[in-house]
Amino acid sequence: MAVTIILVLSLLGLAIAFYYSSSVLKIPIDMGVEDKDTRKRLGKIHAAIATGAMAFLKQEYKFMAIFMVVFAAIIAVLIDDHHTDYV
Image 1 (cartoon, rainbow, N blue to C red):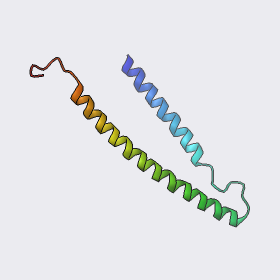
Image 2 (cartoon, rainbow, N blue to C red):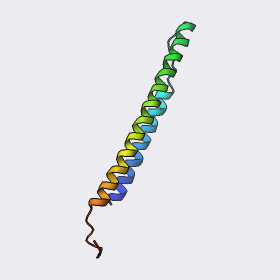
Image 3 (tube, rainbow, N blue to C red):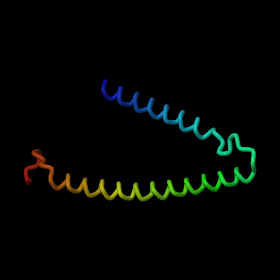
Image 4 (tube, rainbow, N blue to C red):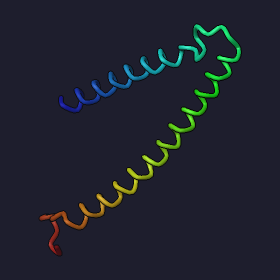
């Protein structure tokens, strides 16, 4: 029963995330802008933000991967398994 609830709520969360993501992506970058120079400037700003965000995420994922490996090693060393005879 608990597994079913977990799976249903997980799928519901993914569906809601997909809905919000698709609704945000439908909004054009230059909505309401008439001037061509402003449109070009908005495009450049958008590209700079996207590049910076991806660089940040790359560093963040690298940090998280290192943290998870180190923490998993600490747990593996310090865990006490009562089901093995040789420990």
